[in-house]
Image (tube, rainbow, N blue to C red; front, side):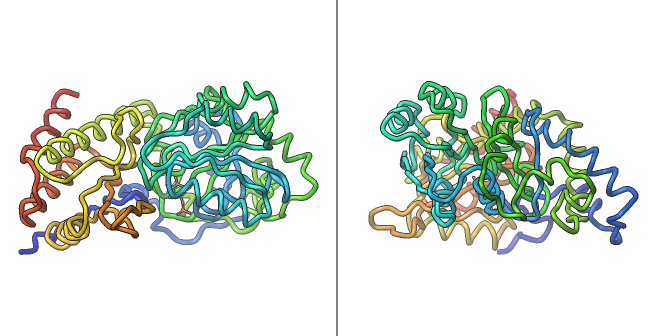
Length: 395
Ligand SMILES: *Cc1c(COP(=O)(O)O)cnc(C)c1O
């Protein structure tokens, strides 16, 4: 029977759940883009944006998704023919590498697989073998749900002493997993609007340090549209966005930043950490009596924003179909997790738990999955929801 009527939960790792306050802020007539509220609002938003990435650096905003932010970061810092090193811990690392290749950049991919995070020693070794202009890494790779240590990679880059920039994809992690751009020494941080920032897809953000700004100034040529210079330091409002402003997204973003700063970024990190632990506790119990496993074995390497799980075929697809049809919960598909006997990685699925999610949503999500496992006769140990409730009760 279908029990799906009611408010649906899109529990995929982006786009994330949109708060009512964000939706309400966007529901309005077109504003004037030459004077008035919008202009004042954007000027005031820049410091609030910087606080989400914990940086005193610069920020450029693009009308783009995360892929656009990837391209923007590269277009401002690396010329065709120059070299970068990309640390890959899942599909998104490889995706950023492909983007760089498409720009004519020489790319070396350091592949850590899909089970273990970036290892700083291997980064050091690769840099000793061949210097690069920039090292790129994905903080939380959304396909594997691995989280890597940015500060450790910074130390490896500094030890190599070649002055390489460190560029970090925080598209999945910003506003979910703790991230300290300045403290950890990232030169460039890229993110998008539709994950921890809780706004529809359509805005890309590139934060950059003074050192990255210097590297930009020394570039022979940067595409006019992606040039972060005028966007980060506009002489007039029009330059913030290289053209017409993404008006409604900006109102949504303002509402989201208000929510973020009312709760406090550290409280947000703690909320995500506890909810993630509740999910892991449930999954570990279920796995005691059946095939379900968390993709990342070591808790300290797991993201707090997304969880990749292996259930095998055809169970994973059946479970996703059941939770959507019977209960109104949409789970994420496996991404980039091909393995022997399952070339498309269909035995995997993912929980997105980024942004506007709270304890009752996560308990509902887990209760729904436990019901689905039972309804479909997928072997599992019962009691996952109780284990999750215990984590939440003790938090
Ligand atoms: C979602 C995501 C991307 C891609 O963002 P798009 O908005 O889909 O272009 C890149 N990297 C990571 C880590 C992501 O989570």
